[in-house]
Image (cartoon, rainbow, N blue to C red; front, top):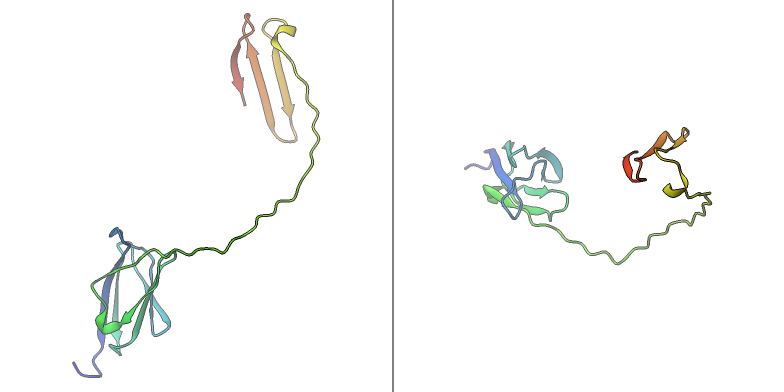
Length: 140
């Protein structure tokens, strides 16, 4: 191979379980060139320098870096685990006051209906009782 010959890069990018990684980025000499397709493969023709740096990246995985001439037919990316030093979640305290009332079935006549309509919120709650004061159906 002469120094002026161009090469074609072809590889398949998979995870540690052999599952293809769709959309892995292929960067050659710090320039984004291509992404893998649905089955994890990519073909890049016309690479002028066979010793160009090839970097394969995918979110959540460690980068894979190699010279173009040594790029294998299958690249296996490993999951990159990062440990955080720690973080704090702050939630502002809110105080809400609500009025409530309780109604029991014993105080109501047979076949009674409670209908609460909160039109501003668009919520309707209905409860139906049979003649033995058992809930038959509830719609929310």
